[in-house]
Length: 281
Image 1 (tube, one colour):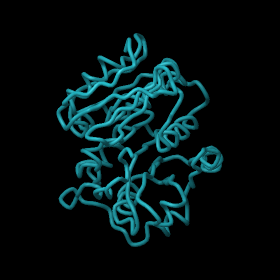
Image 2 (cartoon, helix red, strand yellow):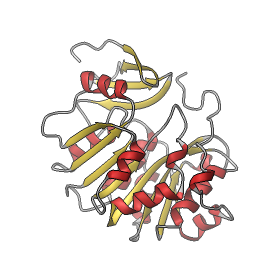
Image 3 (tube, helix red, strand yellow):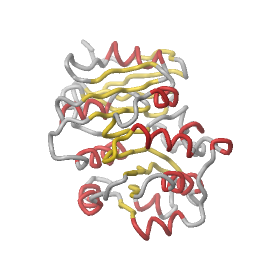
Image 4 (tube, rainbow, N blue to C red):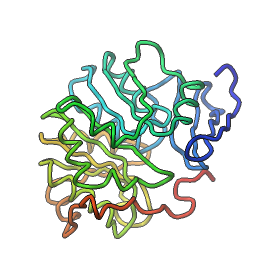
């Protein structure tokens, strides 16, 4: 953008707004119908403003040795915050971003373009359909950050979806998902139980206040076939401005409890956030 002035535009699924950050010269907040979707600093793509995004970044930092290029599939695009981060921290990475909202993708492409040679390809398509057509063993990382409004659509919550994720990931690949829930965590527990049917290693990253049931909030699910360096991940997340806890092993199995995997025919969207949970004050 040549000038830091707000932009508002109807998109396929609501009204999108790009608002400049007065404290950072080329930084922008993207909202859809008032709910924050992405924050991007065009001059500093490694700056991750949202706490859940920082946690996704921490996991990505530990996926492989520093700087090694990765093949990443992002389900859900927003303003491409995480793809920009990977392009900056792991040059040469090949990244596919699947965004269902054509109007939103056009807005971001027009006002917040990625540089040439970034390795980021944006595809306007249904993310579940794209995943079904993706080649087997083709991704080092899959990131699930698909929201319809403020809810994860039902099609991204079932064993059938998890099976497609597992098919597309390489044997040493990692799946990351941004989820949101509150006590008694019926949705979060069901998602962990669902991915436990296919992946040997699971971890959950969230603020202690969320895990204690004090408020609605984001949680990052991590699933893999190989052991996760949860100690290093815990150190990274504990150092954030809003520290998070990493649950894994017996503690995570206790958290899952008697929750059952979600069959495709029983899948429902994630719970509706309470008013103001993710809105701008």
